[in-house]
Amino acid sequence: MGVNGDRMTKSFAVFDCDAHVNDPLVIWERYVPDSKKELVRQTYWRNDFEAFVNGDTRCIGGGNGEFAPMYNPILIAGPQMNKKIMRKLIAMMPLSDEQRDYVRHAGGYDAQSRLQEMDLMGIDQVLVIPTMVIMNVPFAEDPEGVDVLCRAYNDWCRDWCDEAPDRLFGAALLPLQDAEAAVREVRRAADLGFPVGLVRPIDARGAYPNDIGRVMASGHEEKGPMDVLFRTFEETGVLLGMHTFPAGVLGRTAFPGALTSPGELVNHAGADSQTLSFIFEMQSWLAQVLLGGFLDRYPNLKMAVFESNSQWLPYMLETCDRLFKLYANERRVKAARLPSEAFYEQCVISFESDEEPTMIQWDRFDTVGIWASDCYHHDGADAWSAIRAMREIGVPEVTQARLMGGNARRLYGIEPKVFVTEEPPPIERPDWFPQGAELEEWADLVAHPRENADVLRERGISSLPPAEVFASPVYGGGSS
Amino acid sequence: MTTSLGDRGFSVVDVDSHVWEPEVIWSDYVAETDRDVARQAFSRRGDEITVGGEPAKPLFRSKINRYAVWRPGMTVDDIGALDPDAEHAENPGAWDAAARLADFDALGI
Image (cartoon, rainbow over all chains, first blue to last red; front, side, top):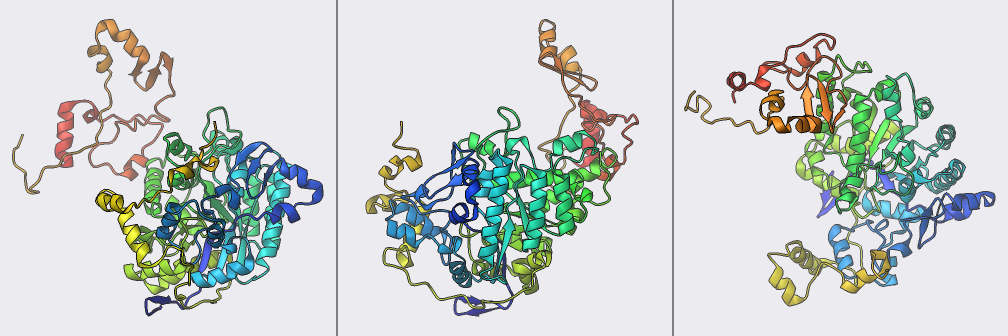
């Protein structure tokens, strides 16, 4: 690893284990058979301006038109973007169509654009994960409609990855409303070469993925309806990819008033569940998995923990180990391994470029940490920023190589290939684009609004868009 | 009692430690006229809990009272090794002040 001026160089292959596509409309238009289009329309359907679950429950689908006059936050975090730029763009609202199109990164739906943007972001290979379908489809009620949609997504994703099969890899969407259908799709995903199948750990429709309540209540005599699915993950070698999302109830719950996601408690408090929903959903899942004997029940299962941050993992493993020992003679399920041992043998966890606490604890993540860009979602970042941070912290280069790709490829069984070695020079931007000294000065001022209050007032600077923007129906205004 | 800070040179304040609410709270510290109301609202007799006049879920899943069984020197592994079907004495330090002070001394608090 070296430095090219202020620009980084690298010698190892970077594998981005959790980056996204913005489920393109072509899935519904071309990959859903004509004979099933109405069924899928009544299951989960979207266009560029609106989306519906179960035919009539409105949800966010990810279309560019849904977010106007703001940028699309699902497609914003591309090459050389950062949070200062995004914050300034918000202050510039309403953005023009030209501006919104410019910051809508086409790599979120177009494979060739993705490759170009990966080159700029220092990413050699990537596993792409869908976006709003993971959030919305768990609430869909029609098993056949979900099955058709999942097959359509996976067929589209296979074609998309085939444009660069040694760089682009897919994670399969699974029709979890029907365990047998999910089993079939895992087998098909294995045949199609998908390294990962996706599950979101929430209680949508009262169907938590491992039906832990029923399994535990029966003293593990019952296996739960998803037992056959987890066995299939073991048999096929496809990784179980647990991926979390912000909380939102879009349909049936276990019973009236029941939570589907622990993140809903954050929403109840009036804050946005994006703050902690990802972490809460995963910690709830892992606590049961690690203390409920799940990994011993499925000893050949490999599981990836996605999109949930990671710096909490050492604390959680220590806590679970302590509880495991405290109840050594009262556990309903006997287990030979400590939760931490089971995790290190069967699991990996993703981390992102801004997780310096994880990098500081690099020895705890050396064999289980897998780097994720999370692009193009608004908190995404490139590989260069992660490598730069690890260099400053003093993470050994051999560990950097494992964290930035080696661990993920080992589990996925993917051959490393290096396509990019040098951080690119600054991208030439249009005049209106936030950049340079002016952006830095603005960001410094709005980052400290109290101490800079007089300057901000004198110069008429605000980090918020004009009030009339919030009158738009998109932001809850303009309706009665 | 000592006023010395001892060899450590500082005093230790334990900011989160528990009592195992003794049954005398209901029998001796709730006025007789309020006792029935208080017992119905929330009370404990042994490991039986009453909440809102109804019996609540039993506190213990075994004969181990995990709220009062620990005593100075016991490790996590010691607790885990306890026989869940055997009786285990509760530590009086969980409700008796004099016993608690003796535990303080053993624990360096």
